[in-house]
Image (cartoon, rainbow, N blue to C red; front, side, top):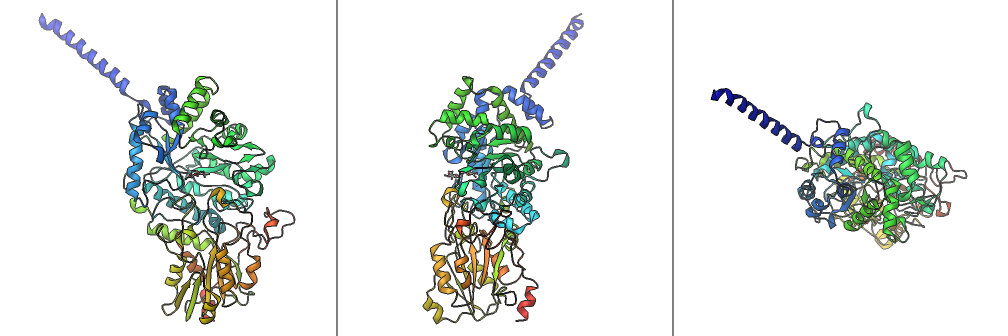
Length: 635
Ligand code: BGC
Ligand code: BGC
């Protein structure tokens, strides 16, 4: 009798507890954390759980220097960046970088929903803020190579070096089409020719991985050895009047589409995950306020599905002076269609302002949701929820020999030979490795910082040799010549010094001092004064080869008659050996000008295809050498 009642009761109890477990599991089961669910399902689930504050947190990007793990947690900050030179400590190791990034990430993960943050950095010619990283030639030099496959391999190497430091996101490539070399960012542009810029978007599959064919046009990141890329600066940054940085680009629709836009649609097809808005204006409208181009054209017509990020204090600069009316800036910038705001210093001001704009119905919830959906799509796509914390597995990739070899190859291919002796029958290059005594001179011969240019270790670049690891051009020359050749180095030799020495030939390395952005705007485009003096002291006294280290064409015409050979080496980076490889004929010159070389600055702007085109060296110019070793042997 007892057992007859007990069995059904036991059954009921079991049933009840099973039901309870089920409910509890359902309650704890977070669909958005399930990697087996489709991304759209995960996004929808996560967004249904988020408060306005959590959504605005996702839209906020802050520089590491103003951040703590507690701020990450308390505000659910969506993204952290290192601005130029913003490093955990000087000469930090890859491990120290990983530890720092993880520290911020742990803060983000301990927020209510545990949404991982995404860490971004400018890796615009290799992982340039980081000590010991391989520094590749700046984009202008890569444009001279005409080698998209090389650029793709550089992207893949950069991705590994960036991941080595625990970082999954780079603010690169800059796909500006620089139409005026007076612009201080011209070296960040591959070319004045939109076709070349378009080809060089091959760096994107290098950085992010090859997009599977059926995914063309959708943000894509192929796992933990790849990084999220960012095409910048949308759009027309390279077209400003007189090349003045952050200024106004005047362009009709046809010019915009044929010159400044092709890089963007090719980037989108290749799966670029993010796009950065330009500080500049287009026909008087600040791009950070340009709803028509950011929302209607980029997101609408071009169907860009990744997220749009502002530039550093880019919304502040909507007003003049910057930050004059922050409420207006936030309203206009977010309404234009910017999804993530590189605030990047004052988070409470941004968050409070945006919150009150939404609460007072100036910005609709649909706009916030569009922004958050895009940010989360990139985070899910790249696998950030599955692998939010970095490890030390790639630390040896930073500055690896394989990457240095690749950079050296890039340097070789980027050099453009502009003059080689008085005529083709009497070439000066290649130089013989065996000579009794040679002179190496000039401000840039023995200066690793100078040969790397801006955006190296710090924002504006550095000087000297104790800045990172690499090979100066002087060291490279010394390593290349025959052991019996005496190499004499003098940064600025006097004419007396020249006369009292019997040099077989001299190599003079001069150019521009490092700069970035507005500080690099120049109306006269001259070689630095010390360089001009050295050229005039040396050239004419001995046979002289001038190697020009610059981010753009400079005034050279007045010096040309004195110079026996002239090589444009752009901003080659840490692997100076690539320069020596070319001077001594281990490889033939093949680089082609990615820009028009003007005679005088009053010709500017002057671009290939212009009527009245009258350059010193036209776009595409570049002397070649061939069978170089034979030539040397026959002397
Ligand atoms: C530059 C961007 C860069 C950002 C972050 C800005 O000043 O215009 O190109 O990505 O700073 O360093
Ligand atoms: C930062 C750069 C940034 C610039 C913008 C600098 O302080 O280091 O990354 O591009 O400010 O003005």
